[in-house]
Amino acid sequence: MFGRARAHREFRKAQRAGHALLHTMQSHPGFQPPAPTADQAPDPAAEAVVPDFLPPDLRVPSRQEVEGLMMRWQQPLVIDGEVRSCPECGAYRDWIIFSMCDDTIHLRCRAGHTTPEPRLDPVWFNRNSGPVDHFHPTLDEGLRHLGH
Image (cartoon, rainbow, N blue to C red; front, side, top):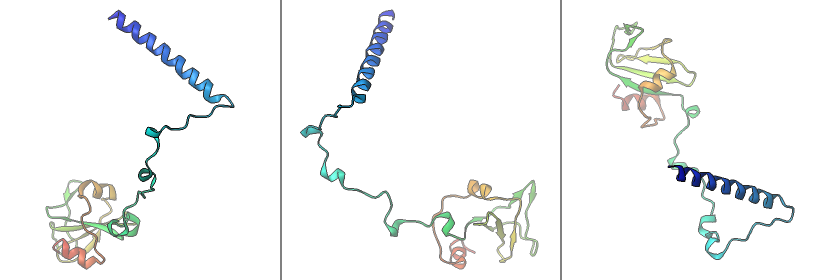
């Protein structure tokens, strides 16, 4: 055990000395880094610039480019210990929940009544919704997709 610790200490000492020598060489005004050898030459195919961006047909709109997100909530919606019901028709399940760009949440019942819900926020929506799987150009197409 002691022999290994001594060897490790000597290795670290030699490593620090090598780093100091390298730093001294690189800071010398006449230092030129060595040219790469044939086996280290860069591959011309690797030098071709490949953009990090997806092609336009594979890109999805950003959060700022859509008016909002929606998800279906079939079970009763319980907020602060009370079951939320529609103020117009009394429905208490099968909601469409909208998270709008202005950080408001709106609920839509099966009958089509829409009401804001100030007790919910986009953080709650993001925590309870799944990943975005479809983008729809109109509200009606999104509602049809969700079965409303």
